[in-house]
Structures are given as structure tokens and as C-alpha cells.
Length: 119
Image (cartoon, rainbow, N blue to C red; front, side, top):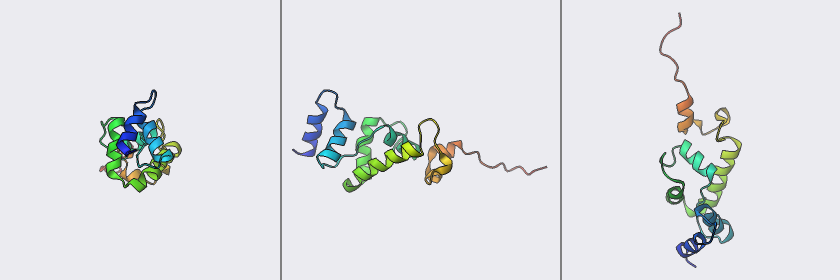
């Protein structure tokens, strides 16, 4: 089956959405797809990799345009690992994060030093 046909067939199965379909394509069938789960969505948003208000469903195609097919599987797994170990949903460990300089969330939490001098 061609990729789009397989994707459509999978998504037409009861209980199979875009994430599950992409996981089956990528990891079971060896057909390039970039699965977007909660970790991928959160981390890509915080880092400004995807537009802030983009839906999860549209993020699948967005990520596939940004990365090479050979990077889909490893990229997906690295986003998940980063989201589980450092970039937690409620309390990210920004002080441990090597990506904080490019992170929109870190930048919004960081207070710029005051220009006023000490008395």
C-alpha cells in the first residue's frame, strides 16, 4: 500500500486517530510518519518549532515538513524523552535543559535584570 492509502485505511479503523496511525506506519510498517503525542506537541510548542495555536492534527504534517523521513522515528522518540525527563507539562526543569536558550517558555519565565543600579 502507498503511504496515504495506508494512513487513510488505519484512520478509518475504530479508535485509530492520527497519532496511532502514524505510530503504526513509522514503527511497525517502516513507512515514514512523524507521530505527535502530548510530549511532542508540548515540547515543539515551547521551543517554537510549530506555531503556537496549531492543532495536534496539523502538527503531524508540520513536523514532517521540517524533518527528513529518516529523522521521523528518532525525532519522535527524542521529543518524548525530553518531555518525560525534563520538559514536564506542569513543572519543566528548565535549569537542567540544554535547549533553554531557544525555548519560548523559558524566555517568558526569565526575568530580565534590572537596569537600575544598587543604592
